[in-house]
Length: 289
Image (cartoon, rainbow, N blue to C red):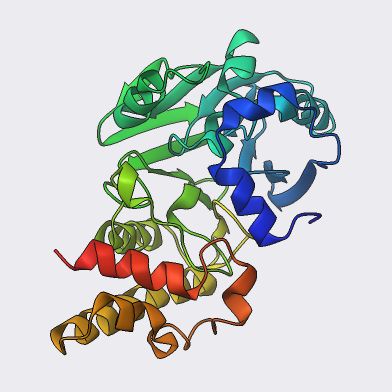
């Protein structure tokens, strides 16, 4: 990819409406085949999931509004069908910024109820609001897949969903799984450490050892890599709770690299958006209640 993780996640957090006025001309949209008629698109922002077929393109997330035309052009290389269905994995702008552009082309947008609420409340943006919302789970029968869209509460945010294509055996996790890096758990948007752990357990319970996994950020993963991610979350949680029980202060915990070094040293994570100190601070804030 042309972007380092640091630049990529800086883009993730900036108000996505700013990008409506930029052409982001240097961003390349890449198509990565995943399994049969399932693909992953990478550009700037969260990974997009695509399921092609006679019912039209089923898409998961849409990155930033300035990239919509590039995405549409790239989709023409794998399907002559329009984007008829669009699911938002959560509300962040690097996953929902293109909603309006695809909605104006006729896409029907699905999301958890909290996604619609958060997008509707954000008056600084022009959002394509989800038309179909749900609380716990919705089943969709599109392109020969009995798609499961399951809510996992208070994980990365309060509106996350996992999307599983059982016939194609592909899972899209949204930002409840960051492959090859520390996670971003948005505590201000209802996220929590315990919820993110539960989301990973739920995801693993839906799939098998042959499942291909599209994470919110990072490369396509396998079952073992997803398990390793869960182990990381659980281990850091245990280490933080032990440090709290030992009476260590917040600053001592944030500065203690040993809490997280089993997975990534502070040096290796230096260019991650969520570096060692940030992840320890996030876990401390979420668990010290």
